[in-house]
Amino acid sequence: MNYWLVKSEPFKYSWDQFVKDKVTFWDGVRNYQARNNLKAMKKGDQVLFYHSNEGLEVVGIATVAKEFYQDPTTPDPNWVVVDLKPLKPFKKPVTLAAMKAEKKLANLSLIRQGRLSVCNVTPEEFNVIMEMGEMK
Image 1: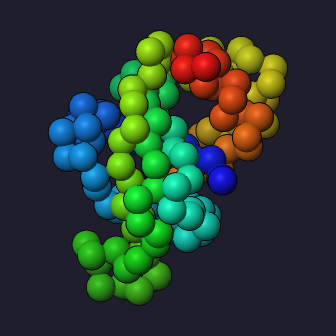
Image 2: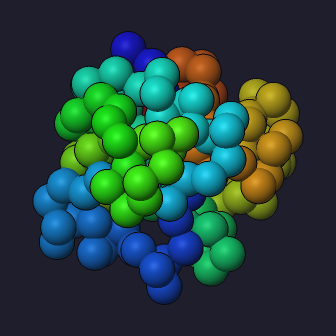
């Protein structure tokens, strides 16, 4: 299993809306590294859902429900989406400040490449964030 982090601005697409929708395709990715991360996602991989710009915190866990396919919002074949399904909210959201303060997360892509909207997360980083969110 692989682990990922996706970022969404809550005013555009919040965790609460994601839960109401039950499943969504993750679109709007227009960065090649983020696109390659979408292509690398496999069904069943776990995904941290991060509120960017407002909140700046991991608020829930999702799973990859369907692997990559053509982004239906554009005819450009370079862009893809995956289907994500919410699993559960974090008991305690994990803030960016708390992640930056945690030495075990010093190499976290979210911190090193702050503008990247779809990041890979190591199993160790995932477990640290889960513990910080009181999910373990």
